[in-house]
Image (tube, rainbow, N blue to C red; front, side):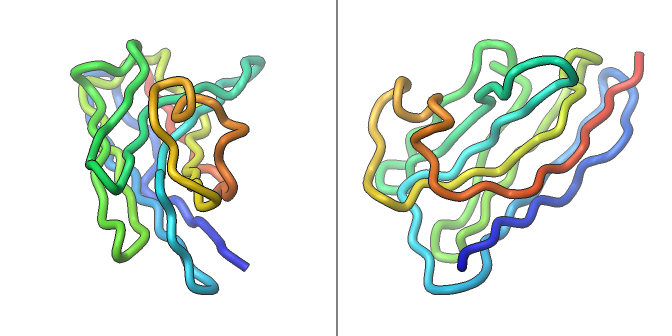
Length: 129
């Protein structure tokens, strides 16, 4: 069984920063892609940012462009999300996700939640105005 565990969420003022972490544990685990999604109250889960390990290619949502940065270590099955210049509209539960079934190429694959095989339990990020 593979588990993804997020940490680093919390309450921050607008303009502040947070760094989320996600680590995989359990049986031998190899992922092709790891990413972050978020879900605000009353809204659908949405893609935030992802990284394809084979090439290092990252994909991001327009809403976080220039503010959020994904990084990580494939060998350790760990991914981070550095969030700067946070806005109240960034308030959501942030979920880590991983895809292990096969490689995933292109924005359409990376942004589709159905393309991911494992999910974390989520970590709350609240940005006050």
